[in-house]
Length: 395
Image (cartoon, rainbow, N blue to C red; front, side, top):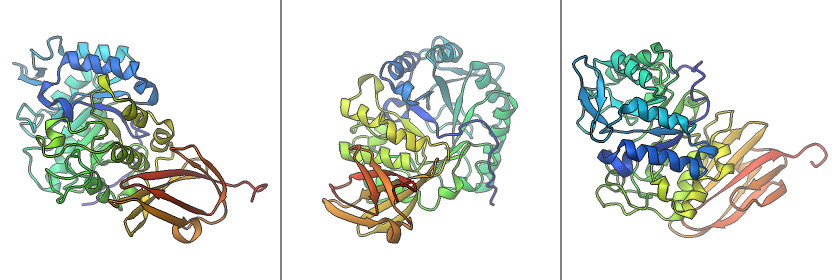
């Protein structure tokens, strides 16, 4: 089944950016926490950088009332979701929520199956701006997944409210082929992200950053304004905290270099940038990664192009991403466990003819008339160049 179509929606014309409660807080998500996160996104400068969605993940549901309307856990959300949405909106931010295409969510609380229209109306009435829709406890075939996701997509659209629709079935049923047709604005391409650089296995409990990057190859043709491949939440800055991302302590976190590389590659891939660290207590170095305006500009470029892998050899990955205004971004990633030297000719290796001016993002070093990139990178580090063609006076 191939139902890939271009979206005409004005929603998610660039990849959504924001914060999600899952990896760090799980069942401890609450009204108080979400308000504090909203305050922190503003005070830290993250909202000005583009992080605008605050997504309440699983465990918020208290059940259904006599009219079969969802209601939040009354202890952790004593004021209801509408009041919380009003507070988040007052900060210039947007509120997201979570449900599941089955009777129960991954956490075992009430899902939306057979109540799609009612729940979509409830979300819209509360002022919800984003729905993450999971697929736990649902049949495994592609046809059923498409049918269930489209039913919620149609229900969201019928509310008349612009709600970002995040399809989260972990990439097992190739959602890049059908998620747009189901109304999705982004769709998961992999299992849940874990806080480790590389795992020795890839399944629903063990994939790390590099495992996930491998799964993005060849998906670039399905991404663009209004619909994005989603390689899952950023573990950047978690440092081994969080039951889900650490698998209850099995994974102890990544180095600052590895976190920077994850963020950089996610920007190259035009991925949604959804953090889940505690933004109330951010480390200065991690904050500098997440607020890097040049990297964010690559992710949010209006052309909406996802980078493709143009070199995968000898421990190196090289990504090439077309940008607006006749520019390109090139990312060189050292996937080796040791420092190494690289040298890539633009014409022979990357099929880029002529002479180019380049800006190296992390150092702001500027090069004129470059034809070859050379350098040394430590283990798991990367370098990113933004290239623009030299004008006729400088060729």
